[in-house]
Amino acid sequence: MSNTLRLGVNIDHVATIRNARGGVHPDPVHAAKLAEKAGADGITAHLREDRRHISDGDIERLMDSLELPLNLEMAATDEMLMIALRHGPHAACIVPEKREERTTEGGLDVAGGFKALEPVVKALKDKGIRVSLFVEPDPKQLEASAKLGADIVELHTGRYCELEGDDRANELKRIIDAAQSTDDLGLECHAGHGLTFDTVMPVAAIPNVMELNIGHFLIGEAIFSGLDSAIRRMRSLMDKARTDARGERSA
Ligand code: PXP
Image (cartoon, rainbow, N blue to C red; front, side, top):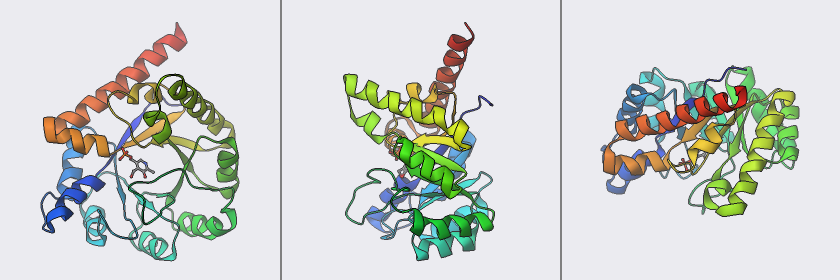
């Protein structure tokens, strides 16, 4: 197992700020290019049904101009499937989506929605798009994801980030256990949601986790220190966590 940990930068909230005024500034594609220079390994964008941040045009421009792989977050709807198949991003991460939610709340119910997800996963895979499923660190969901033929599971770190003290430690343990089980299930393990400078290291230290997807905090932090600096600092915390964990394991 390689110990490389990739950073996927989610640029949705650059588009949120742009859309607040309805113009073209700040441009999420420009942010994606800056992210690449700052050390991002991939770009993530969520095309929501209500287009509240990223637009169809953004996806088109990202596909045309990005050197980095694009991870398209999408709901498992016919409309989003058509868009993904048309653009052929490197990966598609299927997320649950409710119109009234502020952000993706909770993971995808892969076990409960197995039949409906089956044709979506198959169509994406047939097109050569890597399929990721955004799930809670729950064995039932991981087993269903493997059975469905997903390539990747992205573990939802939102609860871990929101909780404190023992509750946070317990949630971290669930994430560690889930990540460990992905090897046997033949799934690549990613993680993300709500991660900050304060919460990233324990997740980055989990050896099975291959990629973290981080957005809101980085874009918010960019207001104070700039996007380049925010991404570089996150990258260095991730790398430090990984190096420290490797040292502890071999000691
Ligand atoms: N991963 C997934 C599947 C998400 O839906 C999101 C939010 O769009 C993220 C990661 C990034 O979360 P945050 O913006 O809180 O860093």
